[in-house]
Image (cartoon, rainbow, N blue to C red; front, side, top):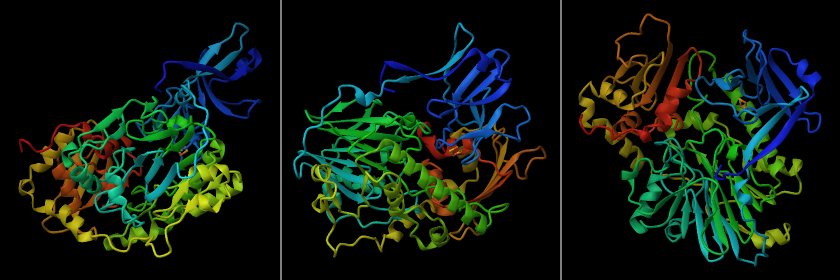
Length: 571
Ligand code: FES
């Protein structure tokens, strides 16, 4: 990524005898040198190979006993399935491709698995770290994923969400931002926004910025789905879209580069900031930041940790989705996430680690059920685990307004002066959120003229354009308690031919029933917003038969509208 130079690394060598013993179909192999595992698929005398490492969160594959063709392996962590003969994931269906390794056949009958990878871009033009003075580099935590870096004379802000809800009305700030947070945002020298999700790209916050400082430089990665996809929402005039993996020199001492995510390269990014040879790595929400290749021994690393950032499984009903099943599932998932993050941090050995980007709460009273059941990891638990696994790494769980002085912390991690906590009188947790202001704005969409005409349905789904997929969806508009309402729409969409039947077709098909809160649904339709607002924001309830994840439908409606043309001009 971002470099033309490629490195060839031989990961596994097999001699002629070992090659001869490979059976047709899937073979699991372990390197005797480093214990790492690989999968080799043999078909006649053709070989395909990959690391035994799931694209999702690095889980290990085993033979899939349900697969009769012998081509599929199953991840032991969350059951993703990979067809090794095509290197395509089959669960989630039509989703990802596995990265393949080169198989080179040797003259003596042996073979080698070779990884071709770009030279790590942050190694271009390396800098020797210079000593930092007290007060020269300060890291201030604001809220959620919003951090301010003071680097010499400049101030660099990440992902400012300081006002209003995210994901329609589903997420609200847990922490009270410092009183001067908006002023400091508007006075920053540069801003990085990692991706389009509204807890990072916060329109209520950016509206304030656009009014006070429209020309502030805002940096985003060149993702195929643009970060600023609803440009008309705010008038910011200096958005810089950057290529991945290239140092951006701000001055003699400060530079940064944006990297992409390995699982969602179309939308997720992360960042490395280098000041006087000291690196700060912020992996934000990336599932597999930069495909798993990251700098080791950075001075500060920060990442998400909490989980709970999706409607699954709390918004699902019917079938296995009892409260006890959900509770058990959540418990296990959170534990796996905690271990994954702790292992990643341990392997990268930053000097200081800070968990962040998980501080939201489902505060609106109508989302009480979600708030009470959607447990998240605590930053303290993750830090305790890291302290156990890697005691040399200093961990930091900041409160809003807390400041880390990097120069002091690097010189002596035990120096209490290195961290300044907010005064005891400072408010840490929010206790009021202006619910009505934001909820009424969403609800104002209900009365829009377009909904007086039944054919808005056809117009909308034709605009979105997704079809040729054997799925029928029933969409029901509901009140806040997900009860049907008399004047709400209740309709079917057949995505095979994009028709709108009055009853389910006789052919075999996958079926989804989605109950959406009317205000949020109509706002999403009216403005061509992403269905993320409904799904990640807990604004719907979903039942599916069979119980499978339709990656391409959600992909289309959750993240892809941004490439579509304007909605409603000719309606
Ligand atoms: S399914 Fe493989 S790590 Fe999650």
